[in-house]
Length: 103
Ligand SMILES: [Zn+2]
Image: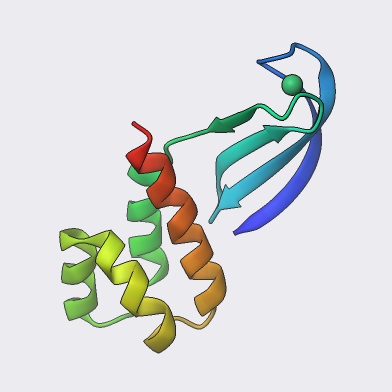
């Protein structure tokens, strides 16, 4: 998960203001207006999961099956054991999963 700040036109208050942009992997998953506090969540799960699959494609096939079956369950067990940047991965997963439930 990366966080960046950019100057954007807010869709809620329609002011040009600082926005906190949260990335899951290379996808924008959340934008928060520093002016009015409006949060825009983007559902990145459709893009993110295939992308993640690619990123960990060197991992064992068993892992890939679990990812397809239940990414949420995988998120809770994967970070501790497998990935090289566990904390970051877990944070990304939480962001993505939250955006997914919001549908
Ligand atoms: Zn705003």
